[in-house]
Amino acid sequence: MTFANATVADVEQFMREKDFTGYDIEFVVNHWDNNNTAALERLNYRLIRIEYEKAREDFITANDFFFYNQIYLSDDVEQIADELREKLHDLWVNYDLDIGSSISLEKNERLIQQIDLKRNELKITMREELKSI
Image 1 (cartoon, helix red, strand yellow):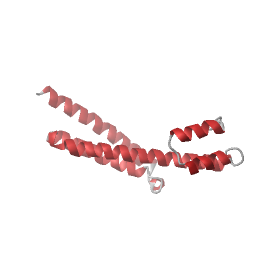
Image 2: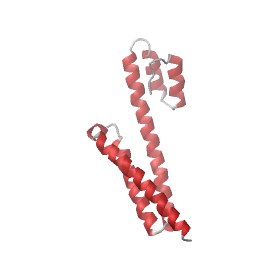
Image 3: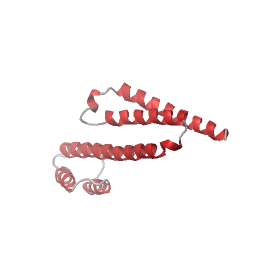
Image 4: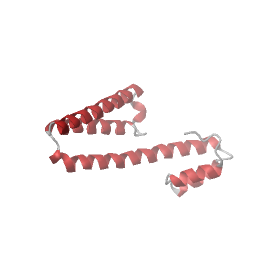
């Protein structure tokens, strides 16, 4: 997301909608006009952190859903879903700002492709199982 043409009011509203801390909002607003580079760096860093934490919460929800429903899954579906869950976890970890810079873009792109393939494999397997009922 770019904020090149955004006013300080636009940025403040955006940050409030994304649940930024008051400290970060105050810093960005106070530095928007006189030190825009520092304000943008803080804004982008915190936005990535917020999105990373949201992804963590979503992963935990999906992980819990998998474990709660595991008993109802066929062995094939369970195996594919577990492999998908592991790949999603690996990708999430790779996006951590503290270690992410050491992960190559190609590795993440491969993981995303593998995730897409696993999702498709899971969908096909589940459809085939439902057809056979």
